[in-house]
Image 1 (cartoon, rainbow, N blue to C red):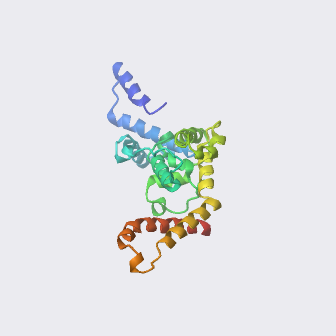
Image 2: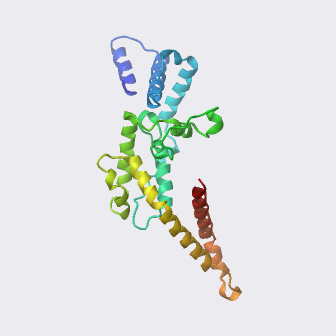
Length: 247
């Protein structure tokens, strides 16, 4: 049974004269939502675990999933072209996936998370994660039929963007099996690898050197003010690369 079956079943029962209270419909929606959640996390569960508290939490979760929010208005990232900056594309694509729901209403961003294994959480998740989505992204297993379906969706979304650019070279090997996670990791390895880091640092140092102060006659304060955001961005890139080297 899928989520959309519940209203259909209720409607059919009413045609036969059977009255289904709204509270009963809510119970069924909450139960379905809870079961799908347990299935997606590959947990063993029993009916005794579906307590009144769990029912209310699951019902609210289901209601939230049906609401239209600003997240539904998030634009898809633009195509990855020859002159596209990887960092900007990476952030846009990750944001897009975090606002796109996959199987069992999990955000698709979990497919491209850093860790291959689900995190072993110790302590209260509310103290460790800012949102439920962040927590679920960390603990959902990267295996099973639901993951396979989500992984293919991610690949289909990813492959359409660098299809006619040099970046396609790095993901074409994963086309046959539609492996979105492997394709994403291949792109990251290329654009964030050691060679890419050296190029970024070289370009950053060259840009900073060009802005060196050589006396007020040779230094345009107007252009300096215009270039300030760029240097802030350069500093951010260098800091990001430094942090990755420390890990």
